[in-house]
Image 1: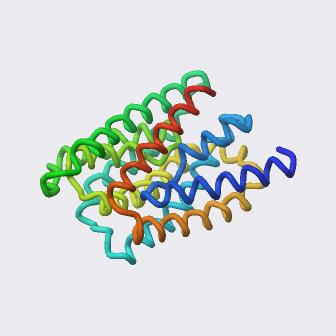
Image 2: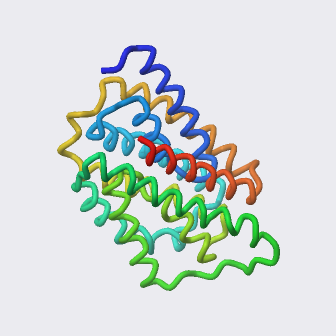
Length: 249
């Protein structure tokens, strides 16, 4: 167990991380992993802890976006149908730390780069979103669900760039979709990683409270006050920072 001051410091960082990620419809798993990794926590503790924090923030975010009228079932369910079972499968797989961090970090950097480009180049004259083909949505949800289960990230950080780059959903509705996807897949991945639950830290309940406060602040601020361009830039920056930190562990 970490000393009290380190636990308190991690709690503050978790609150800040949850606030930033929730403002763009994300639950923050990659940020939590980065924070815990820098604090020297065991990877066996990090994955289930990040998923537990993800569930709390994703639940708050989904509720906030639902109340704001931004959640659309038809936008979400094609990705969630296969995302849930494949997240369970991925959650049961535990990669060694030397493989885990570089893989996740590289995926996040690629996603950040791709997401930042349209933020600079495609804001003007962009076509209205077109609904994705159903079968392609199923495959996308399944693939990202499996990756999210293996990495313990919830999957929203991978789904958001895909649906935005393909112009399948407008950005605010995309934030609502990814919040719900994070919730569903985090629950699934935690079920798959059930054997590691004994490694959850005793201080987790306090971290969950910190994440809940940050998630409520971020979700409220994001879906009411931030312009679309700012949302895209924030998400791209968060992905880049998280990816870099994971690679440098």
